[in-house]
Image (cartoon, rainbow, N blue to C red; front, side):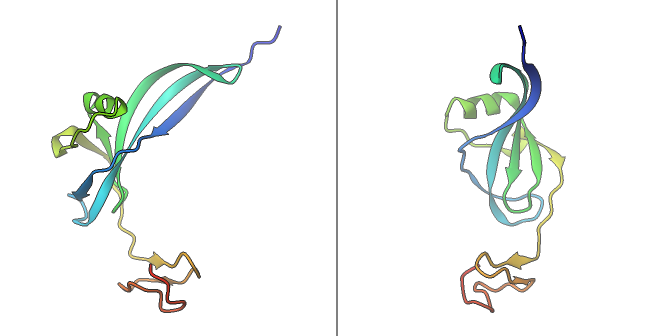
Length: 123
Protein backbone atom coordinates (compact mmCIF):
# COMPACT_ATOMS: atom_id res chain seq x y z
CA UNK A 1 0.00 0.00 0.00
CA UNK A 2 1.29 3.42 -0.95
CA UNK A 3 0.72 6.50 1.15
CA UNK A 4 1.10 9.79 -0.71
CA UNK A 5 1.34 12.79 1.58
CA UNK A 6 3.09 16.12 1.63
CA UNK A 7 3.48 19.42 3.41
CA UNK A 8 3.10 22.59 1.37
CA UNK A 9 2.69 26.29 1.93
CA UNK A 10 -0.51 27.84 0.66
CA UNK A 11 -1.95 31.28 0.09
CA UNK A 12 -5.58 32.38 -0.02
CA UNK A 13 -6.64 35.82 -1.25
CA UNK A 14 -9.78 37.39 0.18
CA UNK A 15 -12.32 39.63 -1.53
CA UNK A 16 -11.82 42.69 0.67
CA UNK A 17 -12.06 46.28 -0.55
CA UNK A 18 -10.98 49.27 1.50
CA UNK A 19 -9.70 52.45 -0.08
CA UNK A 20 -6.86 54.22 1.71
CA UNK A 21 -4.17 56.86 1.42
CA UNK A 22 -0.83 55.10 1.79
CA UNK A 23 1.28 56.22 4.75
CA UNK A 24 4.42 55.18 2.88
CA UNK A 25 4.07 56.73 -0.58
CA UNK A 26 1.11 59.12 -0.11
CA UNK A 27 -0.87 57.75 -3.07
CA UNK A 28 -4.42 56.47 -3.19
CA UNK A 29 -4.77 52.72 -3.22
CA UNK A 30 -6.61 49.84 -1.63
CA UNK A 31 -5.76 46.99 0.68
CA UNK A 32 -5.48 43.42 -0.62
CA UNK A 33 -5.85 40.93 2.23
CA UNK A 34 -4.48 37.39 2.06
CA UNK A 35 -3.59 34.51 4.36
CA UNK A 36 -0.59 32.17 4.25
CA UNK A 37 -0.62 28.76 5.90
CA UNK A 38 1.11 25.39 6.02
CA UNK A 39 -0.93 22.43 4.85
CA UNK A 40 -0.68 18.65 5.21
CA UNK A 41 -2.12 16.87 2.18
CA UNK A 42 -3.03 13.20 2.00
CA UNK A 43 -3.50 11.86 -1.52
CA UNK A 44 -3.46 15.49 -2.75
CA UNK A 45 -6.40 16.41 -0.51
CA UNK A 46 -5.65 19.14 2.06
CA UNK A 47 -6.35 17.67 5.50
CA UNK A 48 -4.78 19.92 8.10
CA UNK A 49 -3.84 23.61 8.05
CA UNK A 50 -1.69 25.38 10.63
CA UNK A 51 0.49 28.45 11.06
CA UNK A 52 -2.09 30.82 9.60
CA UNK A 53 -0.81 34.37 9.16
CA UNK A 54 -2.73 37.30 7.72
CA UNK A 55 -1.17 39.97 5.51
CA UNK A 56 -2.24 43.17 3.78
CA UNK A 57 -0.63 44.48 0.59
CA UNK A 58 -1.20 48.01 -0.66
CA UNK A 59 -1.95 48.38 -4.37
CA UNK A 60 -0.18 51.71 -4.73
CA UNK A 61 3.40 50.79 -3.74
CA UNK A 62 3.10 47.06 -2.92
CA UNK A 63 4.11 47.49 0.72
CA UNK A 64 3.29 44.35 2.75
CA UNK A 65 1.96 44.56 6.31
CA UNK A 66 1.28 41.86 8.87
CA UNK A 67 -2.35 42.03 10.00
CA UNK A 68 -3.50 41.41 13.56
CA UNK A 69 -4.86 37.82 13.75
CA UNK A 70 -8.21 38.78 15.29
CA UNK A 71 -8.87 41.25 12.45
CA UNK A 72 -7.86 38.63 9.87
CA UNK A 73 -10.26 36.10 11.36
CA UNK A 74 -13.10 38.64 11.20
CA UNK A 75 -12.36 39.24 7.50
CA UNK A 76 -12.36 35.47 6.87
CA UNK A 77 -15.83 35.25 8.48
CA UNK A 78 -17.03 37.96 6.07
CA UNK A 79 -17.54 40.70 8.63
CA UNK A 80 -17.38 44.28 7.42
CA UNK A 81 -14.45 45.71 9.36
CA UNK A 82 -12.16 48.68 8.74
CA UNK A 83 -8.42 48.09 8.87
CA UNK A 84 -6.78 50.79 10.98
CA UNK A 85 -3.05 51.67 11.10
CA UNK A 86 -2.75 50.15 14.59
CA UNK A 87 -3.78 46.75 13.14
CA UNK A 88 -0.79 46.74 10.77
CA UNK A 89 2.93 46.04 11.20
CA UNK A 90 5.15 46.69 8.17
CA UNK A 91 6.89 43.54 6.95
CA UNK A 92 8.28 44.53 3.56
CA UNK A 93 8.71 48.01 2.13
CA UNK A 94 7.30 48.43 -1.32
CA UNK A 95 8.17 50.71 -4.16
CA UNK A 96 6.22 52.93 -6.46
CA UNK A 97 7.11 52.26 -10.03
CA UNK A 98 7.42 55.41 -12.09
CA UNK A 99 7.22 53.47 -15.34
CA UNK A 100 3.81 53.20 -16.98
CA UNK A 101 3.27 50.46 -19.53
CA UNK A 102 0.47 50.36 -22.08
CA UNK A 103 -1.50 47.11 -21.92
CA UNK A 104 -2.40 47.41 -25.60
CA UNK A 105 0.95 48.04 -27.34
CA UNK A 106 3.55 47.65 -24.58
CA UNK A 107 4.91 51.22 -24.83
CA UNK A 108 6.71 52.28 -21.62
CA UNK A 109 7.06 55.85 -20.35
CA UNK A 110 7.85 57.70 -17.14
CA UNK A 111 5.64 60.66 -18.03
CA UNK A 112 2.25 61.20 -16.38
CA UNK A 113 0.15 60.66 -19.52
CA UNK A 114 -3.44 59.48 -19.22
CA UNK A 115 -3.37 58.06 -22.75
CA UNK A 116 -0.65 56.14 -24.55
CA UNK A 117 1.23 58.45 -26.95
CA UNK A 118 1.83 55.54 -29.35
CA UNK A 119 -1.60 53.91 -29.74
CA UNK A 120 -3.97 56.33 -27.95
CA UNK A 121 -5.42 53.83 -25.48
CA UNK A 122 -5.98 54.90 -21.86
CA UNK A 123 -3.25 53.73 -19.43
